[in-house]
Image (cartoon, rainbow, N blue to C red):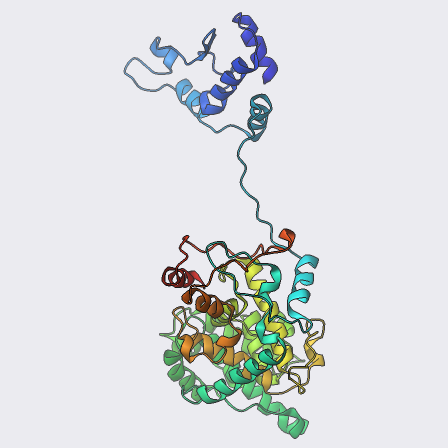
Length: 456
C-alpha cells in the first residue's frame, strides 16, 4: 500500500514524505476506500481530497436522487473498517502504536496445579498476613491461603462450623436429610438396598433444589417419594406421569433427565440401580449429574471426601479466602475455590483431624481418606451457612467462622480506621492476579464498609 501511495504522490508532484503518506493512510483507514479503488478521490498538494460533487453518474445516483447499483456497490465497499494489516502499516509509518486491548491470562494447567498446591497444602503460619484494605488492596497469592487450614485456629474453626451445622440442621425441616449409613456395620446383602434408596433420595433432592427454594421443594419431594420410593419404581413409571409430578417446579428438562437416568442406572449391568460412589464416575455416567451433584451424592451418601460447591459455597469460600472476583463466570476464581473446597473436605475427613493433621491432601486421592459422615456434614454445613447466614447481605454476628474470614477481617480493620501501610508485597511478581479492584477510592471506615458490599 505504501508503494502505491508513493506513486500517487509523485504523480501529483508531491514529495512522498512520511507526513503526506500518513495523511493518505489515515484517509484510507477512515473508511474512504483505497487509492486505487476510489477513482473519484483526488491527490493534491493539500493531501487526499474526497470526491467532488459532480454529475449524478459521478455520485452513483440517478437524476431523481435514487442510488444506482454502482453507487451501492461503492458505498458498501468503502464502508468497512480498516484491516489489521493496514493498521499495522499505519503504525509503522506514524511511529505511534495502535492502542491494544489488555490481555488478562489466567494461569492454566500445570501453573494452576502448582498454585493450588502452594495455597492449600502444608501447614503454613498465616498469623503474620495482615488484612489488605481498599483502595489499593495490594496482596500476594499467599493472602488467599485458607485460615481454616492454619494450625490450631483453623482446627477450631472447622470444629465450630460442624458443631453449628449439627445444631442448625434440626431447625429447618428437610426430609431428605438422614443419618449416614456406615458400611462397616452392615453386611453386603443388607447394605446395598439401603445405599440404593439413600443415593436415590439425595439425588432427587439435589436436582429439585437446582434453581428452586427449599420451602417449595419439600412438598414436591415428599409426594415424589411417596409415588416412586425407589429408583426401580421411577424407571418403570410413565414419562407423562413423571412430567405431571414435576409440574410447578419449572425447568422441565430436569424431570426428563432424571427419568432417563433412572432407566439407564437400573438397566446398566454394573450399576443395577445403585448410583456410583465416586464423584467422577457419577458425573461421567449419569445424565444430568454435574460436578456439584456428583460431589453431594458421593460425600453425603457414601462418605467419600469429595467437595460439593454450589453458589452458596462459592460465596462463603470466596469471603473466607478474601477473593474479590466473579464467582459466577470467572473460571480461574471458580477453579481456585473448588481446589480450596477439595483441600478442606479432605482435611476435615481425617480421623486424626486437628492442628497437627496432615494438610498435604491435594495430592491424595479421595479413596485414600477414610469413609465417614464428616465429608457430608462439612459440605452441607458450608451450604447451610451460605443460604442462612453468609448470604449476599451477610449476618456476620451469627457466623461461627468469622475468625477465619479474610473479608470479615478487612471490614473490621476498616471499621477501626486502620491504615493500609502494612499491606505491602515484597515481590511484585508474586502480586495476586486473581482479584478485581474494589470500586471507589474512599478510605474512611463507613465508606469502605459500603465498598465491601461488592464482594460476592
